[in-house]
Image (tube, rainbow, N blue to C red; front, top):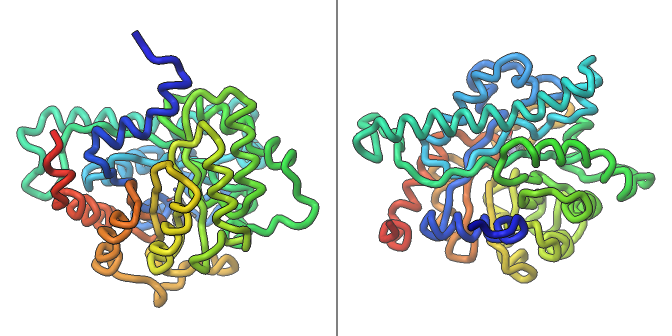
Length: 344
Ligand SMILES: [Zn+2]
């Protein structure tokens, strides 16, 4: 007695949000957390390098985020591309298996987490871990073409004048198809830097019979437009007109810009709005390091969260340089909300 695929796809996020009490917690930075645990990600594959060297570490970081209260975990496929794996000498088949592995590792973490919830007698352990049985989504990350280039263009959105829609569609198509058939609940198109790439993602979703829904998440460095300078209203408009897109928002952007960006997105969409800012530190693409003095503390980050929800965000988490500590604090903010606590 199931709904058709299309119905299930379009209602996935609204059903999930209803079950989660109207708001849900997204996880925090994956790559930066892997690095904090000693992984060396100075590689064109970035966090996806751990799929080769240390999948157990990825699984354990996913678990840390679930135990911090995340309702959605995002896979380690942000910078995992078939082209990137092939450049390392892997065959096409091996590259596709590695992509699938990113989703499997996240699903394994969710299974282990559910076992821990079952074994636990209460929702919160004495050491503060959240062990509350609840719906958890696995979002398969797809980073931009600029993330594959690993030259900082995911923060400039500038792919040069010769770039076109067909190129981007061809670049991403197979990867999206593989991730969509890997057991993930949705695709997270993250850190989308320009309108052309948003259009390419929307076309792939529509033309290629992708059977799971997606979210589109843009990044901004001025609180007005997306990083390329393209209009956020137009970019969010592309997401709005694609039926398979079930949420739209902003990630990897300093917290101070988020309020205004939510207000803009709200003008063009009725879909749920998601927000997972970075810590506010800026990234130096040449040195490949984060410049610390520009960031905000976890306390400051959290002080924004209720305001973001008041103006329309319903999914909140963290991106680069945020940690399970940040996510635990977001979880607590939500737990204190009357609306969330009164739902069974
Ligand atoms: Zn980020």
